[in-house]
Length: 366
Image 1 (spheres, one colour):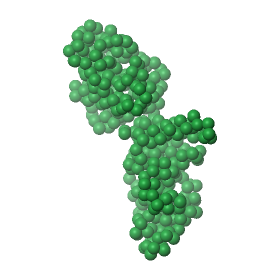
Image 2 (cartoon, one colour; image 1 turned 180 degrees about the horizontal axis):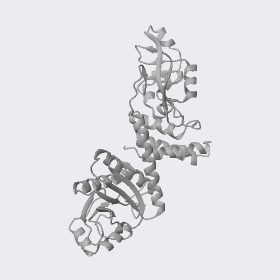
Image 3 (cartoon, one colour; image 1 turned 180 degrees about the vertical axis):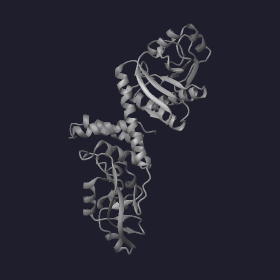
Image 4 (cartoon, one colour; image 1 turned 120 degrees about the vertical axis):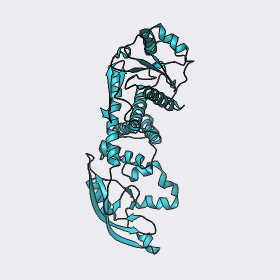
Protein backbone atom coordinates (compact mmCIF):
# COMPACT_ATOMS: atom_id res chain seq x y z
CA UNK A 1 0.00 0.00 0.00
CA UNK A 2 1.03 3.62 -0.35
CA UNK A 3 0.79 6.56 2.01
CA UNK A 4 1.70 9.93 0.57
CA UNK A 5 4.81 9.12 -1.51
CA UNK A 6 5.90 6.13 0.59
CA UNK A 7 5.31 2.52 -0.47
CA UNK A 8 4.71 0.36 2.63
CA UNK A 9 4.69 -3.42 2.33
CA UNK A 10 5.93 -6.76 3.70
CA UNK A 11 7.84 -9.76 2.41
CA UNK A 12 9.18 -13.05 3.76
CA UNK A 13 12.92 -13.56 3.58
CA UNK A 14 16.38 -13.12 5.03
CA UNK A 15 16.90 -9.53 6.12
CA UNK A 16 20.68 -9.86 5.72
CA UNK A 17 20.18 -10.30 1.95
CA UNK A 18 17.99 -7.24 1.41
CA UNK A 19 19.74 -5.54 -1.50
CA UNK A 20 16.90 -3.09 -2.25
CA UNK A 21 17.14 -1.22 1.05
CA UNK A 22 19.54 1.57 1.98
CA UNK A 23 19.37 0.32 5.58
CA UNK A 24 18.06 -2.60 7.58
CA UNK A 25 16.96 -2.62 11.22
CA UNK A 26 18.55 -5.09 13.63
CA UNK A 27 16.74 -6.09 16.83
CA UNK A 28 19.77 -6.12 19.11
CA UNK A 29 20.67 -6.31 22.80
CA UNK A 30 21.89 -3.62 25.19
CA UNK A 31 25.56 -4.47 24.53
CA UNK A 32 25.06 -4.39 20.73
CA UNK A 33 26.91 -7.69 20.45
CA UNK A 34 25.72 -10.45 18.16
CA UNK A 35 24.30 -13.31 20.17
CA UNK A 36 21.64 -15.47 18.54
CA UNK A 37 18.58 -15.25 16.32
CA UNK A 38 18.39 -12.39 13.84
CA UNK A 39 20.92 -10.31 15.78
CA UNK A 40 23.49 -13.08 15.52
CA UNK A 41 22.72 -13.61 11.85
CA UNK A 42 23.22 -9.89 11.09
CA UNK A 43 26.58 -9.80 12.88
CA UNK A 44 27.73 -13.01 11.20
CA UNK A 45 26.77 -11.79 7.73
CA UNK A 46 28.22 -8.29 8.22
CA UNK A 47 31.58 -9.56 9.49
CA UNK A 48 33.99 -8.75 12.31
CA UNK A 49 34.08 -5.05 11.40
CA UNK A 50 30.51 -4.69 12.68
CA UNK A 51 31.47 -5.96 16.14
CA UNK A 52 34.36 -3.48 16.25
CA UNK A 53 32.03 -0.62 15.25
CA UNK A 54 29.42 -1.62 17.84
CA UNK A 55 32.05 -1.72 20.61
CA UNK A 56 32.69 1.98 20.03
CA UNK A 57 29.00 2.93 20.48
CA UNK A 58 28.89 2.27 24.23
CA UNK A 59 25.82 0.09 24.20
CA UNK A 60 22.19 1.01 23.65
CA UNK A 61 19.26 1.26 26.07
CA UNK A 62 15.84 -0.23 25.39
CA UNK A 63 13.87 2.08 23.12
CA UNK A 64 16.97 3.77 21.69
CA UNK A 65 18.59 3.24 18.28
CA UNK A 66 22.11 3.60 16.89
CA UNK A 67 23.49 3.36 13.35
CA UNK A 68 26.59 1.71 11.84
CA UNK A 69 27.82 0.90 8.37
CA UNK A 70 26.63 -2.43 7.00
CA UNK A 71 30.08 -3.70 5.96
CA UNK A 72 29.64 -7.07 4.17
CA UNK A 73 25.86 -6.74 3.85
CA UNK A 74 24.35 -5.57 0.52
CA UNK A 75 22.74 -2.49 2.16
CA UNK A 76 24.63 0.62 3.27
CA UNK A 77 23.65 0.90 6.92
CA UNK A 78 22.39 -1.09 9.89
CA UNK A 79 20.23 0.66 12.48
CA UNK A 80 20.36 -1.21 15.77
CA UNK A 81 17.58 -0.90 18.32
CA UNK A 82 16.78 -2.64 21.59
CA UNK A 83 13.24 -3.86 22.26
CA UNK A 84 11.73 -4.16 25.75
CA UNK A 85 11.64 -7.50 27.49
CA UNK A 86 7.95 -8.38 27.47
CA UNK A 87 6.52 -9.09 30.92
CA UNK A 88 2.77 -8.70 30.74
CA UNK A 89 2.21 -5.53 28.73
CA UNK A 90 1.59 -3.45 31.85
CA UNK A 91 5.12 -2.19 32.40
CA UNK A 92 5.37 0.30 29.54
CA UNK A 93 6.54 -2.28 27.01
CA UNK A 94 4.47 -0.85 24.15
CA UNK A 95 5.76 2.68 24.77
CA UNK A 96 9.34 1.43 24.68
CA UNK A 97 8.69 -0.50 21.48
CA UNK A 98 7.08 2.59 19.98
CA UNK A 99 10.24 4.54 20.88
CA UNK A 100 12.31 1.92 19.04
CA UNK A 101 10.48 2.65 15.79
CA UNK A 102 10.39 6.42 16.31
CA UNK A 103 14.15 6.55 16.91
CA UNK A 104 14.90 4.19 14.02
CA UNK A 105 12.86 6.28 11.60
CA UNK A 106 14.26 9.56 12.91
CA UNK A 107 17.84 8.36 12.47
CA UNK A 108 17.09 7.01 9.00
CA UNK A 109 15.42 10.26 7.95
CA UNK A 110 18.29 12.35 9.36
CA UNK A 111 20.83 10.26 7.42
CA UNK A 112 18.99 10.63 4.11
CA UNK A 113 18.01 6.97 3.97
CA UNK A 114 15.20 6.60 1.43
CA UNK A 115 14.47 2.87 1.67
CA UNK A 116 14.47 0.85 4.89
CA UNK A 117 13.98 -2.81 5.74
CA UNK A 118 12.31 -3.26 9.12
CA UNK A 119 12.30 -6.42 11.19
CA UNK A 120 9.77 -7.79 13.68
CA UNK A 121 11.49 -6.04 16.55
CA UNK A 122 11.37 -7.79 19.90
CA UNK A 123 9.48 -10.92 18.88
CA UNK A 124 12.43 -13.26 19.41
CA UNK A 125 14.28 -13.56 22.73
CA UNK A 126 12.49 -10.47 24.07
CA UNK A 127 9.15 -12.34 23.85
CA UNK A 128 7.02 -9.46 22.51
CA UNK A 129 3.79 -11.04 21.14
CA UNK A 130 3.81 -10.79 17.35
CA UNK A 131 0.30 -9.27 17.20
CA UNK A 132 1.28 -6.54 19.69
CA UNK A 133 4.56 -5.89 17.90
CA UNK A 134 2.80 -5.59 14.54
CA UNK A 135 0.14 -3.18 15.86
CA UNK A 136 2.74 -0.91 17.50
CA UNK A 137 5.03 -1.07 14.47
CA UNK A 138 2.35 -0.29 11.87
CA UNK A 139 0.76 2.43 14.00
CA UNK A 140 4.11 4.15 14.66
CA UNK A 141 5.37 3.90 11.08
CA UNK A 142 2.16 5.34 9.63
CA UNK A 143 2.19 8.14 12.20
CA UNK A 144 5.76 9.05 11.24
CA UNK A 145 5.04 8.93 7.51
CA UNK A 146 1.92 11.03 8.01
CA UNK A 147 3.95 13.68 9.83
CA UNK A 148 6.97 13.38 7.50
CA UNK A 149 5.47 12.70 4.05
CA UNK A 150 8.73 13.29 2.14
CA UNK A 151 11.01 11.20 4.37
CA UNK A 152 10.93 7.78 2.66
CA UNK A 153 10.32 6.15 -0.70
CA UNK A 154 9.88 2.62 0.61
CA UNK A 155 9.41 0.95 4.01
CA UNK A 156 9.32 -2.85 4.03
CA UNK A 157 8.94 -5.30 6.87
CA UNK A 158 11.18 -8.28 6.08
CA UNK A 159 9.76 -11.16 8.11
CA UNK A 160 11.50 -14.44 8.84
CA UNK A 161 8.50 -16.64 7.98
CA UNK A 162 5.07 -16.57 6.32
CA UNK A 163 3.26 -16.81 9.66
CA UNK A 164 4.74 -13.51 10.86
CA UNK A 165 4.16 -11.97 7.45
CA UNK A 166 0.46 -12.80 7.71
CA UNK A 167 0.22 -11.02 11.06
CA UNK A 168 1.87 -7.87 9.66
CA UNK A 169 -0.25 -8.05 6.49
CA UNK A 170 -3.36 -8.17 8.68
CA UNK A 171 -2.17 -5.13 10.62
CA UNK A 172 -1.54 -3.23 7.36
CA UNK A 173 -4.99 -4.19 6.08
CA UNK A 174 -6.58 -3.01 9.32
CA UNK A 175 -4.61 0.25 9.09
CA UNK A 176 -6.13 0.82 5.65
CA UNK A 177 -9.54 0.57 7.31
CA UNK A 178 -8.45 2.96 10.06
CA UNK A 179 -7.29 5.56 7.54
CA UNK A 180 -10.40 5.18 5.40
CA UNK A 181 -12.82 5.40 8.31
CA UNK A 182 -10.89 8.23 9.96
CA UNK A 183 -11.05 10.23 6.74
CA UNK A 184 -14.78 9.54 6.50
CA UNK A 185 -15.34 10.52 10.14
CA UNK A 186 -13.50 13.81 9.61
CA UNK A 187 -15.10 14.59 6.25
CA UNK A 188 -16.88 17.93 6.38
CA UNK A 189 -20.64 17.69 6.84
CA UNK A 190 -22.51 20.94 6.45
CA UNK A 191 -26.26 20.47 6.68
CA UNK A 192 -28.39 23.52 7.40
CA UNK A 193 -29.29 22.42 10.95
CA UNK A 194 -26.63 19.85 11.83
CA UNK A 195 -26.97 17.44 14.71
CA UNK A 196 -23.61 15.81 15.24
CA UNK A 197 -21.36 14.33 17.89
CA UNK A 198 -21.40 17.48 19.98
CA UNK A 199 -25.20 17.34 20.40
CA UNK A 200 -27.49 15.30 22.60
CA UNK A 201 -30.79 14.00 21.27
CA UNK A 202 -33.09 12.82 24.05
CA UNK A 203 -35.71 10.27 23.04
CA UNK A 204 -38.60 11.77 25.03
CA UNK A 205 -40.88 14.79 24.94
CA UNK A 206 -39.36 17.85 26.61
CA UNK A 207 -41.78 17.73 29.56
CA UNK A 208 -39.21 18.67 32.20
CA UNK A 209 -38.06 21.70 30.20
CA UNK A 210 -41.64 22.85 29.60
CA UNK A 211 -42.45 22.57 33.31
CA UNK A 212 -39.44 24.77 34.10
CA UNK A 213 -40.47 27.40 31.57
CA UNK A 214 -37.62 26.82 29.13
CA UNK A 215 -37.80 28.17 25.59
CA UNK A 216 -38.49 25.31 23.17
CA UNK A 217 -38.00 25.87 19.45
CA UNK A 218 -39.67 23.21 17.28
CA UNK A 219 -38.18 22.29 13.95
CA UNK A 220 -36.39 19.64 11.89
CA UNK A 221 -33.15 18.04 12.96
CA UNK A 222 -30.76 16.94 10.24
CA UNK A 223 -28.54 14.04 11.29
CA UNK A 224 -26.20 11.73 9.40
CA UNK A 225 -27.14 8.04 9.13
CA UNK A 226 -24.65 5.29 8.26
CA UNK A 227 -25.81 2.13 6.53
CA UNK A 228 -24.30 -1.38 6.87
CA UNK A 229 -21.73 -0.66 4.12
CA UNK A 230 -20.57 2.54 5.81
CA UNK A 231 -22.31 4.87 3.37
CA UNK A 232 -23.69 8.08 4.85
CA UNK A 233 -26.83 10.04 4.13
CA UNK A 234 -28.74 12.88 5.74
CA UNK A 235 -31.94 12.16 7.63
CA UNK A 236 -34.47 14.73 8.79
CA UNK A 237 -36.66 14.17 11.82
CA UNK A 238 -38.83 16.21 14.12
CA UNK A 239 -37.08 17.81 17.10
CA UNK A 240 -37.61 20.45 19.73
CA UNK A 241 -34.57 22.50 20.77
CA UNK A 242 -34.24 23.75 24.34
CA UNK A 243 -32.42 27.08 24.38
CA UNK A 244 -31.54 26.81 28.10
CA UNK A 245 -30.28 23.18 28.09
CA UNK A 246 -28.78 23.24 24.62
CA UNK A 247 -30.23 19.79 23.85
CA UNK A 248 -32.56 18.40 21.22
CA UNK A 249 -35.62 16.33 22.07
CA UNK A 250 -37.43 13.92 19.83
CA UNK A 251 -40.26 11.42 20.20
CA UNK A 252 -39.24 7.83 20.82
CA UNK A 253 -41.03 6.73 17.65
CA UNK A 254 -38.87 9.16 15.63
CA UNK A 255 -35.69 7.65 17.10
CA UNK A 256 -36.87 4.07 16.48
CA UNK A 257 -37.79 4.90 12.89
CA UNK A 258 -34.39 6.50 12.29
CA UNK A 259 -32.44 3.53 13.70
CA UNK A 260 -34.24 1.19 11.34
CA UNK A 261 -32.65 3.05 8.43
CA UNK A 262 -29.11 3.12 9.81
CA UNK A 263 -26.87 4.16 12.68
CA UNK A 264 -27.31 7.85 13.61
CA UNK A 265 -23.93 9.56 13.96
CA UNK A 266 -25.00 11.59 16.96
CA UNK A 267 -25.61 10.95 20.62
CA UNK A 268 -29.06 9.46 21.21
CA UNK A 269 -30.05 9.17 24.87
CA UNK A 270 -32.97 7.23 26.25
CA UNK A 271 -35.00 9.00 28.94
CA UNK A 272 -33.41 6.94 31.74
CA UNK A 273 -29.89 7.87 30.58
CA UNK A 274 -30.78 11.53 30.45
CA UNK A 275 -32.11 11.40 34.00
CA UNK A 276 -28.96 9.61 35.19
CA UNK A 277 -26.86 12.49 33.90
CA UNK A 278 -28.86 14.98 35.96
CA UNK A 279 -28.29 12.91 39.09
CA UNK A 280 -24.65 12.05 38.35
CA UNK A 281 -22.73 14.29 35.88
CA UNK A 282 -19.89 11.72 35.77
CA UNK A 283 -22.26 9.41 33.89
CA UNK A 284 -21.93 11.63 30.82
CA UNK A 285 -18.25 10.62 30.48
CA UNK A 286 -18.65 6.92 31.30
CA UNK A 287 -16.99 5.06 28.35
CA UNK A 288 -19.53 2.25 28.20
CA UNK A 289 -22.46 4.67 28.47
CA UNK A 290 -21.00 6.79 25.66
CA UNK A 291 -20.44 3.77 23.42
CA UNK A 292 -24.00 2.61 23.99
CA UNK A 293 -25.50 6.06 23.42
CA UNK A 294 -23.63 6.42 20.12
CA UNK A 295 -25.02 3.08 18.96
CA UNK A 296 -22.29 0.60 19.94
CA UNK A 297 -24.50 -1.83 21.88
CA UNK A 298 -21.92 -3.76 23.91
CA UNK A 299 -23.78 -7.05 24.30
CA UNK A 300 -26.03 -6.86 21.25
CA UNK A 301 -23.86 -6.27 18.20
CA UNK A 302 -25.51 -8.61 15.71
CA UNK A 303 -27.30 -5.77 13.92
CA UNK A 304 -24.11 -3.74 13.39
CA UNK A 305 -21.66 -4.41 10.56
CA UNK A 306 -17.88 -4.24 11.10
CA UNK A 307 -17.64 -0.84 9.43
CA UNK A 308 -20.54 0.55 11.47
CA UNK A 309 -19.02 -0.55 14.78
CA UNK A 310 -15.57 0.66 13.88
CA UNK A 311 -16.83 3.97 12.50
CA UNK A 312 -18.61 4.59 15.82
CA UNK A 313 -15.43 3.81 17.77
CA UNK A 314 -13.26 5.89 15.41
CA UNK A 315 -15.66 8.82 15.69
CA UNK A 316 -15.59 8.67 19.49
CA UNK A 317 -11.77 8.61 19.46
CA UNK A 318 -11.45 11.39 16.88
CA UNK A 319 -13.85 13.59 18.84
CA UNK A 320 -11.88 12.82 22.05
CA UNK A 321 -14.90 11.32 23.76
CA UNK A 322 -13.08 8.05 24.53
CA UNK A 323 -9.40 7.10 24.71
CA UNK A 324 -8.26 4.46 22.20
CA UNK A 325 -5.81 2.61 24.47
CA UNK A 326 -8.21 2.64 27.44
CA UNK A 327 -10.99 1.27 25.24
CA UNK A 328 -8.66 -1.46 23.97
CA UNK A 329 -8.19 -2.46 27.61
CA UNK A 330 -11.96 -2.40 28.19
CA UNK A 331 -12.57 -4.63 25.17
CA UNK A 332 -9.83 -7.01 26.34
CA UNK A 333 -11.62 -7.25 29.70
CA UNK A 334 -14.89 -8.04 27.90
CA UNK A 335 -13.14 -10.73 25.88
CA UNK A 336 -11.69 -12.26 29.04
CA UNK A 337 -15.08 -12.21 30.76
CA UNK A 338 -16.63 -13.86 27.72
CA UNK A 339 -14.00 -16.60 27.71
CA UNK A 340 -13.41 -17.28 31.40
CA UNK A 341 -16.56 -16.46 33.35
CA UNK A 342 -18.74 -19.57 33.68
CA UNK A 343 -21.63 -17.47 35.03
CA UNK A 344 -21.80 -15.06 32.09
CA UNK A 345 -23.51 -16.27 28.93
CA UNK A 346 -21.75 -14.30 26.22
CA UNK A 347 -22.53 -14.89 22.57
CA UNK A 348 -19.46 -16.19 20.70
CA UNK A 349 -20.23 -13.72 17.93
CA UNK A 350 -19.89 -10.82 20.35
CA UNK A 351 -16.45 -12.03 21.48
CA UNK A 352 -15.22 -12.20 17.87
CA UNK A 353 -16.53 -8.68 17.20
CA UNK A 354 -14.84 -7.37 20.38
CA UNK A 355 -11.57 -8.93 19.20
CA UNK A 356 -11.85 -7.30 15.76
CA UNK A 357 -12.67 -3.92 17.30
CA UNK A 358 -9.82 -4.26 19.82
CA UNK A 359 -7.40 -4.91 16.95
CA UNK A 360 -8.85 -1.95 15.05
CA UNK A 361 -8.42 0.46 17.98
CA UNK A 362 -4.93 -0.84 18.79
CA UNK A 363 -3.73 0.87 15.61
CA UNK A 364 -4.76 4.28 16.93
CA UNK A 365 -2.13 6.41 18.60
CA UNK A 366 -2.49 6.60 22.37
